[in-house]
Image (cartoon, rainbow, N blue to C red; front, top):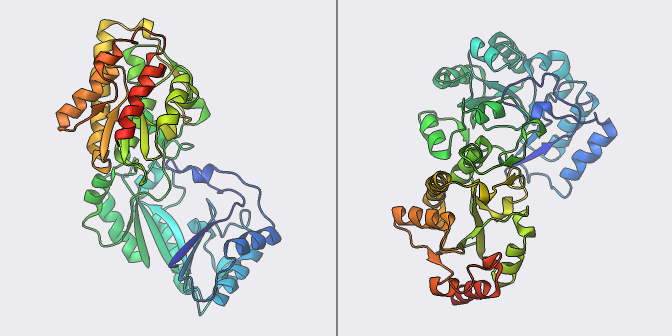
Length: 424
């Protein structure tokens, strides 16, 4: 094992004000030295000496802040690393806590220790804009303290951070001068931080992988495109019931953000090699509806269900996420104009999804009513991309039950779906 990351659930970040950071807003009761030792030892259980090269100990704040992590744990951590022959240890901290006194009982001749500091950008004005809480002068003083005590600095720089644009080259050059290690991290939106509001209002958006690679290609340093399992999350005060059949609801920013996520960050499951477009339902989550319960028994495990609805395309595993569990589109409110708008918007969303992920699937199926706007949108998108999408319902068979209530849950419709699935 090359490295291991351990997150200590103890205390909270003293600052907690960075515009991009949700971790710093997390709160946890400060653990006692006994609790810390028990937690830490449980994470290293079964590990033998020499099996681990690098250990990263994070705490969503500052390891060297005595109000967050009790100082008595510092020497225990270092001695444990020495016993396990761990070559490198990284702990995170704000510059203000990097002092000779705090580092005194963490010196080691066997373990290279680095202070991980979120420098983010090497510009005082930009640091103030992102409310970072320290200056370059403080960072430099911390670097000097580290060198004096045999430590190093691991500097984290944010790529595409709002308020710090066009400063990456300057930041990398500066960080290399004052640090042993530099890592470029793609700035992603934490739901509990102001950055999420920037994203919702369209003032900022995260880089996709292609954009990140392009922005960082000239720098010969460590890079991290997605340093946490990002998925769009919205704090309670931003959530709402999205109801209505109009352009405002169709183009709701919360839907837009999720569609960008499915295009740029979503990874299809390896064991799902058949894509099946299915309709939404009035009942939420979709899986609790009569329709989805009706088709469940005929679907095989390798089929990936993707719902086509007002929010766009929704892989079924996200059906319990907001806002997919918190919207209604009353069809009786639809006008001729909004129906066409729905087709146009949904076609683009399906196109984006297929362009990003179609190559993963061996076959793409469609279980939608042939006379609906969703069906038209899927077929138009597929035609534009030159992708074959097979409808699971023959139109001549559909005619026999299309006027039934919830026709896609009708036994004849389910039988049509089963017929196609069996051929696979």
